[in-house]
Length: 158
Image (cartoon, rainbow, N blue to C red; front, side):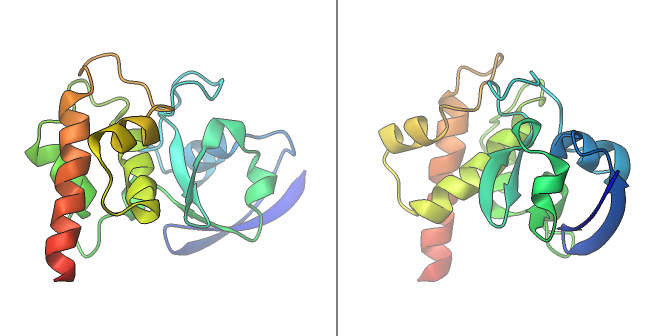
């Protein structure tokens, strides 16, 4: 067992974990952040995407011990004071989900995308989201939601 200390959604957690435990399993089973879902377990689908020190990672591809001393933000950590994050609101308003299974990872990746490129073109959105798969929507409304969130942050900066 290895002792780790991780900040998850602003709260500090210190736990003993197996060195081989994946971050996604640590978040779900130890910390209780079940909004981060297990999709493929092979890093292909992106459903488990979280932010590690502000950058998106597929948590099924990161060991919990690699998060020691670092900050993790999950889908549950995006909302502030009961208000949806602009990306969460944009997904809701643009009907960018159907079954919802991929949605947490999609939103986390989209937030990272806009952090890197606040005003992406449609092609840049599609390219930036290509590591996150959805089997239901056809991606049109997801792209629309990311573009809407980019527009909303532009308006709030003015």
